Image (tube, rainbow, N blue to C red; front, side):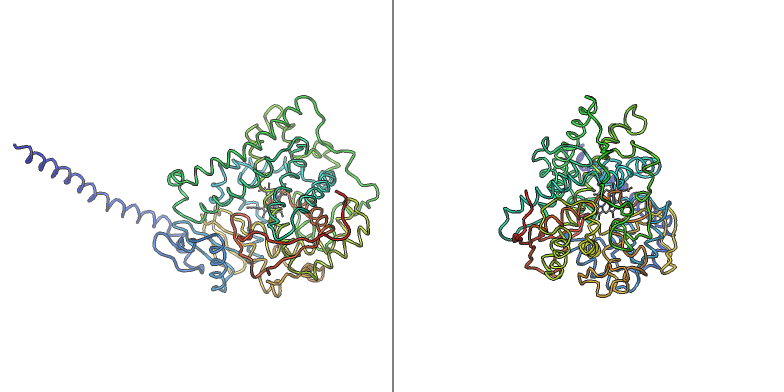
Length: 559
Ligand code: HEM
């Protein structure tokens, strides 16, 4: 046989083999797909009864999530308005997402001890937060939550007041540099990282460097990447993601983020080994002049530290006296002490929890305080009232705020609540259903395997609950207005067993930072809320930055 003929025979047999392969592959894929659809029949049947935008075969509604973060946010809100129901479905490829924004449905999910598993979408946090409190589940979550929640007990928090004041004054000093329009989020972000390092982590100011700022910026970029992975289906599988430029960027960012947490833990461990006293703050807790009745509630009647006072969680347990000194240790001190012997918590688990608290504790409060300042800048009449209240509390004095002062900041607190209503820093909370659940609002059944999403942003803007919901109105939180409201109609810190562990910490810290800023500056804004370009890169933000202007007030606090 000639060479050409031999080649032809070889080619023919290769073609033959490959066409046989395709002939077998096509029916195999069809069969597998038919089986897969059959095995999910129950899911499809129940999903069909839930309203939602029409999707395309295979990719579902994935194309709705194209474009920039602010475009996606705007589109999602607009699309949701096309439906009367307060339960809406969306398909991202094969994943069924169901959005809830009726308080009774939200209560069913958030108050449950069964539906506590975080949605699959949280897995993208893993390289960053490991199995920390935010994403862990089962026994691990339960035991770590029990360990960590008491470190945010009010008695521990009161001992942080001096540090909250010192850092608030430091940020006021830095803000004096700004003469024109600027983005206040950068300042709020750096300030909240530094406060966390000093309070929860016990790292003194003298040993801190610029790593706090670098850390804050790295967290912001990490959130961008996570958001991309949530919304772009092609970035979801690790196999594809690892080949993109984002994977490289993520590794660099994680080096910065983990670099700081490792440094913090190392330094604390050295102190711990050298026998340095743990930060129990035992004798600094009480303010002598403070009436005991104030220890459990804040000033806005019907609300307690950012949630309806009708709701109780493990942060409201007043068991301090019973458990003694151990429960009054600050966060990292308690973890290191518990790690002795390695039974309660391992070194790796400490790192995961430190990363979790550093993230959850800073970006949320930075966004909350930046939205608050933006709102003050827009509503000069409301700012007048806050300033009048502060002047009544502090008079001419530039003294630091006490815990008692924070209880008297009733109007400021109402403004803070209104900010968290209109701009909840965590705009959605997602859970994975492991069983079918009938929603009380409509009787519709959400199938097992669904990602249910509590759409806090939408819930907080329901016109039947908050008349004129797009108007910034602190009077929404007057006692007579909140008295008959559903407890789960306001959940900026989530609620129930997986509520935010830093709720009280955040409220106290925010009141001190924001009152200190407003005692020193008048805030101005050239934009209105309707001009905001909102984006939800995990945390709700303004895409254009939190642009404000400051002018000094006459009464200046001592730096
Ligand atoms: C305005 C400030 C804050 C807001 C609006 C906020 C909101 C939330 C929300 C909505 C959740 C539930 C998230 C989910 O289930 O996906 C949560 C969880 C959590 N937050 Fe916050 N948070 C704030 C501040 C803080 C602070 C200051 C800390 C710590 C110092 C903190 C630590 C945590 C932790 C550890 C969790 C997970 C709790 C668990 O699953 O058991 N947060 N937060």
